[in-house]
Length: 231
Image (cartoon, rainbow, N blue to C red):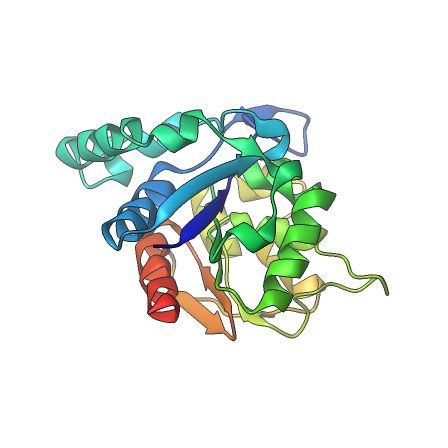
């Protein structure tokens, strides 16, 4: 039916305030749930990363405590292993927005390291927003919006209602105190109208063609909202 572009991190670590490089990457659920929803609806997925590197998995995202137990963790791991597109990404630099009906950014801490400062991604986001095509961004992936700098020095997402991983959630991960910056704070700083939901509960915010999800539990519901716009 349609092609959906997954823009994913190429970073395997997140540099903390003390210089520590914390192993990370993309978060499994935030890829698996949308992928399954989109492909079940008949859509084709293409993965793009900076430089075309295979996106690294945050191994912690397969832990039983984040997947409802051992059975859930195995189910997510098996589903992830079956997604061949992850192993064959295209270069983000070669993406032609005209080829895709939807642009989707899954999270994990990886985007805090690379996509937050990636000018190519920033330009793609600006063009996707202006195109009217559904643009989905989940959890820590709204860090990529920070690179969407316009010609006048502003940010393309200023004034948009949106969400992303909250300060409260980052505090509960135990990482907030050693973070160089927090996503919620930066989204407010660029002029976005940040909408905070309860920690870890699904929270999806839709403003025009922008669909954002706060956390891993929001990835599937965000995909459902995107599919509504494609119907």
